[in-house]
Image (tube, rainbow, N blue to C red; front, side):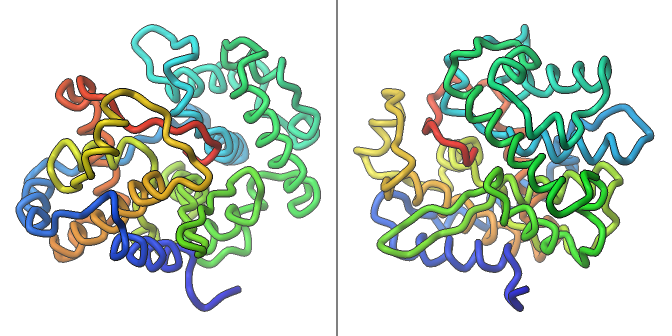
Length: 309
């Protein structure tokens, strides 16, 4: 295993992008005041919808499977949402109901996952393109469980020394792939690999050190909140594209890479400005919760259709 942790690789690459970015800029003069504002807020527990079960294998299954399909924000306007729930909330409720009624998916069930089966669980049209992506991700999880972990979810956590090491384990699975290209350099983000490791810790499945070393979990909401609050400044063309609700390309789009990278870099600066009192993951949670407020919902957020977030 590399002596450089996965989160360190992410933050180094994102700093590199932020220093070269042409479309997105971190307004460093806003960092100190914004960090003080975050620190004054009541501490926010990261959002984690755990299974109401004392069975650690079930808890591990829920955390791993939900994070394997924790993407699709670019499609959320096109799915059937449950009343009062977000796109991700809709998927979570469906998977929880399935686990409650029939038990967690076995590794064998995952490897045989069909589009229609996952569509039924989450209450969507099987022809929706997101369902095929969900099914593929879950099949990959099942394949890794069978090949490397005796079909056991808890075995994924065993033998791992730190939360970043656990994130690195997930990063090797196709279901958690999340690397973009920027000016010829690979830029790792691994939002869901890091989030899966953090969620296993929060669910009491893993008892490992190092959760504070994770980066922010780069998606489209955290850059949106930082943009609305003036911590990120976008060029006029990118601003206009987002405001007109254009879909940003995922492959080969420097604007989309810069948005995610600048958000991660800004969160690192914010964490440092708090003297480490707030970790990047805690700041990510605070920004995610802020994003539910009306002032953020009234403005379009960046949308991109991909399997990263």
